[in-house]
Amino acid sequence: MRAVRIVSSRRFAAACIGVVASVLLACLAFAFGETQEDHTVMKRRQQGILTGMPFMANITPRTFIDDAGRKLYVAKAPTRVVSLAPSITEMLFALGLDEQIVGVTEFCDFPAAAKAKSKVGYANPNLESLLALRPELIIAPREFHRANVLAKLEELKIPVLLLEATSVENIFSHIHTLGRIFDRSTEAHAMTAAMRSRMAEISSRTEHLPRIRVLYVINSQPLITVGPGSYIHQMIGLAGGTNIASGAATPYPRLTMETVLKEDPEVLIFPMGSVETVPRREQQEWRRWTTLTAVQQNRLREVSANALNRPGPRVMEGLEELVRVIHPEAFPPESVPVQP
Image 1 (cartoon, rainbow, N blue to C red):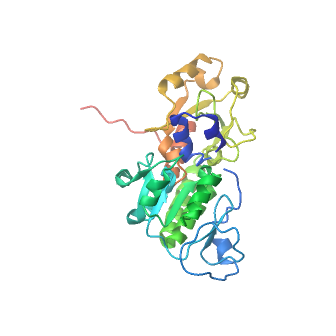
Image 2 (cartoon, rainbow, N blue to C red):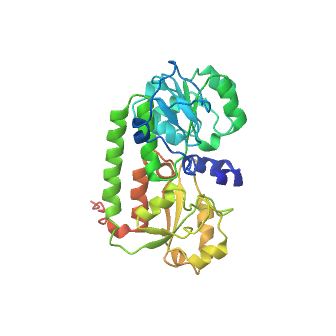
Image 3 (cartoon, helix red, strand yellow):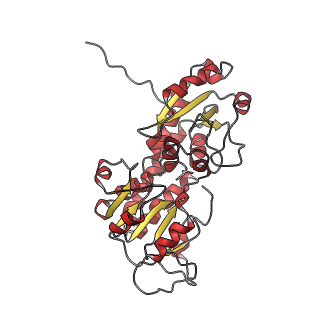
């Protein structure tokens, strides 16, 4: 994720883990889809779990191509896996792989059981710590893709699967891929079917409502938002909004205030979470831009960063939150408890 390189602060880096792990997104050969494999010519190699093999000429039933275009052969379901992103950790737990997870990042805090797992670094994982966990597979966001680190892990015969969600479909695809790697395809299909059903129900609520101009503020200083090529950009559309950065050339563009004033968002959305936050002090500073419709109408809203910025099984919770702040009229008014 380029945005990660732009802002080095811990807060923004954490935000980008989900989004730009995303969160954050180029659509290389996202051949994780089961369809590709199902129709690939098969010639099985020796048993075992091997690292990325650019020299591999044949594709086997358990060969996977990650989001960096690397081939990975996994002969059997790994029994020890390290996750290097909160979204990946959540997918693994949702597939029932609690016992197989031997290491996570310091940002992995959901479900609660993740907090009890051994911690490894995110951006610069300690190789000795990784080795001590004896992983049979490491799953990491694509921004982890540093040739020297991958080369070292490959030398140590530790395979690494790189993921990057550029669209909602990518999230579904990742879940299916993990399901196949760990022999949990049934669980994966059930999970994505439920997510698709919820997505259809939520997005249908805004079909006949006018589009609202939205600015999703990942970081205020510098101002960084989401653009085409990020799944959150797509979700803003599903929620009945129009991303004012829809003309940006990158998934996580910087915007100037001149652009924001010209596009005049009707809603300012700030992701909030335990780490991934735009502090309220920074949110309030937006009120000095009194010509913005969002400021005039007092429509500065918060959504769960953990649900939205992590491209995992909770992302539909994030979609519903988006709809509730962009189109609150799409839901019946919440009942107010009657005071005794």
